[in-house]
Length: 445
Image (tube, rainbow, N blue to C red; front, top):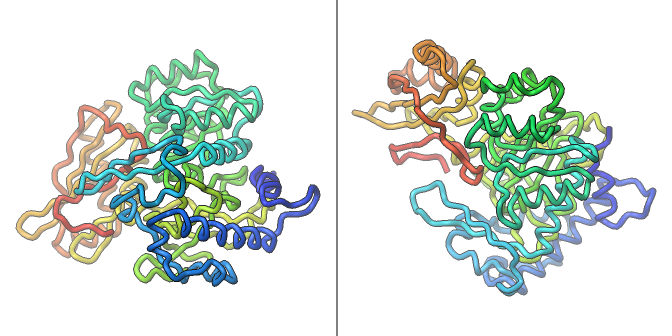
């Protein structure tokens, strides 16, 4: 079935009813919006007035010309977020503060007008159309207590769809979340991958009637195929992936019924894939860093913002028949990689794919230290119980199957410390991604 994003975007870009959406029509719209965004930012934003000095929007004759513009980075926002504003602070409806995962302890602040938030609600309404039918109930396992929060905006979008959003918040008690699923007859779950894995592997999950959960949407962190397979096994329902980040207005791309890549919110965002080392654009099919430009944001537009996420455009057409681009499931983050033995990269995604298939494992924390020139990998496991020694042995074996790990061990540059069992889980709202903690001071950025 065609993704519901296509007719929505068809209307948003001003096509007449019945007129087909084409790449040519979409590219023409995006170029027009890109020029308007640059003009708006240069006139109203002190940061972009300086950052784009001497760059006239009329110089952009094609979308490919965007590659001549400088990047915007997270460090730019950290330095002074208020210089990005294109409206008065009185017009800002919501400010989202993201604590940096680095060592600076500085917070990154993103500003949104009421119109900006409305764009997100509109996307959530249409993006959820693949997962949810009118009358169904969705349990939102994400922050939602504040107006304009992701849970609040998703609830508004679901209401327009004729569905009901039930905000549970971050899962702190799996039994309580499962009880709410049963009591409120929940049809769909939305949440972070490891938290949904925790529910699927909890002892109380057997109390959920078969067929109760009809769909699951994973968001806000790397989605391991091990998590997807386990959720599909336990609940027998399709698992969808959503890619987004606060900087892009929360919503970015979402799976259609084919579940083979996320269709991009192309009327509001222009995506690029670049070589993270050179900054040069990469062709479709090549993995690189996701860069995006907001096309409809008024309060705090971002131009060529480097996300730090690794993915690629899927060149083949989607089975649903849309002309919209597809973004492959994000493979991880540049900042989530560490270099072992001086030359081999290990990512959180590598660890997730190796460890999360292990029965009984709910989450883990990885740390790299150094002792006498030798890299040390420390792993702490959070489990649902069961024989700890057996799980630790299985985890150690799984680590040894990761190419980076066994190569560095074979070269004598890495040692795996005795594995530990944690007595509590590491809760996350999704604003700070799960990552390998590098205590050597050697990070890949």
